[in-house]
Length: 335
Image 1 (cartoon, rainbow, N blue to C red):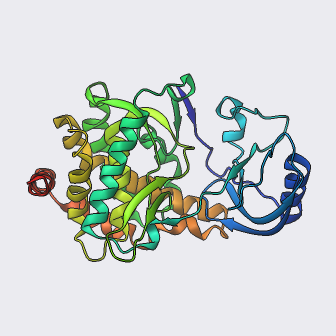
Image 2 (cartoon, rainbow, N blue to C red):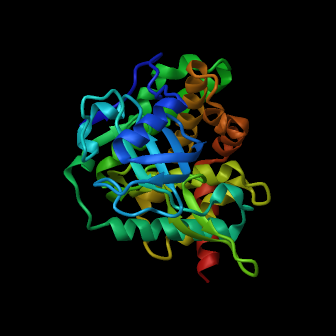
C-alpha cells in the first residue's frame, strides 16, 4: 500500500515566483501570459492563465479560448512520477498545463435542499461512470486525506491548541478504528473522487430555475476505495455553509439524491456519521497545521471558521437517531 504522507513540520507547498511561472510557461509550453491569477489550493499551486499569446507547438496544437491552468504539484506528489504520465524530468516539482474549465463553483451558490439532493445525485452518477475504469496506480494509492489514513492525523495534533478539540478528535478516531476499520472488507468499493467539496463542484445557475451541478474539478485524489468515504466527504463540506437547512439534515438530503441511482448497503449507512466526523477532523487539523507552517495560506483555515462548532453539534447527535433521520428524509424524498 502506497501512502503519501508528509512529515510534521515538512513544507510541501511549492514556493515559486511570478517570474519563474512565466519562465515555465514560455520555455515548456510556448505561452506568453498577458494576465495571470492564482487560484485557491491547499498543497499545490494553481495559476489561471487568463490571456496569452502562443506559438503553436507539440504541447499546444490549438489555442484554448478560456485560458489555461498551470498546476505545480507539491513536492510529496512530485516524488511519485507514476501519477503523472510525463514523469518527474529531474525537477523538484512536477508541473502540468491544463485547459481552464469556465463556470461557477458550488461555494458561490445559496445552499438549498434541492442543491444537496442534486449534488448527491451527481456523485452517484460519477461513481457509475467511473465504475468500469481501471488503472493500477489507483488500486493502492493513499494520501493523508484518504479515509483509511485517518489514524496518521495524530502526528499533527500538536497544531491544535484547544485541548477540548484534541480530545474530540481522539474520541472520533477511537470510534473510527472500532467501527469503520473493522468493516473495510464489507463496504462496497470502486473508483472514488476523493475530494468532492464545494470548490471542486461546478454548477449552472439559470435565471428562472433551480441550480444544477454540471461538473467536477480536480481528480488529484482519485483512488480505489469505499464509496461510503466519498459520500461522507461530500456531506461534510456541504454542511459547512448550510445556513437555511439544519446541518444535521444535510446528509439525508444528499443521500436522497445519491440513492436515486445507487442503493446503499446497510453497512454504508451505519458508518456514515463516523466517516463524516473523520473528514471534519482531517480538514480542521490539517488546516491548522498547514497555516502554522504557511501563514499566508488562508485557504487552509476555511473549514476552521465554522467547522469545530458544527462538528461538536453533529457528533453530539446519537448515531441511531441521526441514521433514522437521514433514512426518513431519503424515504420521504423518494415518495
